[in-house]
Amino acid sequence: MGEKLLKIENLSKSYNAQTQALADVNITLDKGEFVVVIGPSGAGKSTLIRCINRMIEPTEGKIVFDGTEITSMNNRQMRKVRTQIGMIFQNYNLIDRTSVIKNVLHGRLGQMSFWESVFGLYRQADVETAMHLLEQTGLAEQKYKRADELSGGQMQRVGICRSLIQNPKLILADEPIASLDPKSAEIVMEALYQMTTSRGLTCVVNLHQVDFAKKYATRIIGIKAGHVVYDGLPGDLTDAMIRSIYEGKEMQMKLRSELVYA
Image (cartoon, helix red, strand yellow):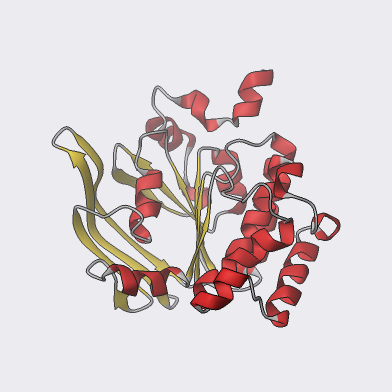
């Protein structure tokens, strides 16, 4: 057994009396795991990730991150915790008219003083780290371009760099390849896997695409209707289990671009 980083106990989230997004979820993550969460739209994958960093408040349950219970923390305390949790979004969340390298450096804002952040006074060491991350993800030549000049796959790699420059302990990626073509999706997943595992980081990735989950995950968690219905090794996830998880929604297992051109 490895060293524990995240423990989720009896986590539930209800939006109203009729809508329960998560129901009694119990998950423990070790440091260094690359975990992929699969399940159809509406299963609760995004709610789970957003409850972990409390972008969404859980209705019940407890979350312990790096030995500290965070569900009862106030906003000021959570801001400090979030500096240790990198977030990668489906729609990139970049500032379009700002350069690539500045978008990466924005990942350091949580560790900067108020005046440093207001005037963009980044330390030279941070600039050098940003340059190195862009080199590692094949984006060095794009560093001074505006973010909106990049392709979707390139923008997502910028998002990966932005999360890594935080020097986090945990990376959360919410459907990072959902809007990409198969080739770009492969490049993004390879970059995310290599950049996190080489640093010994724990990574939780929400995906629809089971083939990518099986290729990259050290562990797969399947969610259906807010319940964890599978938690184990990729090789133990059978076709019958996959059909059960995606029952009636099998087309969601493909990238959107694959559906367009099918």
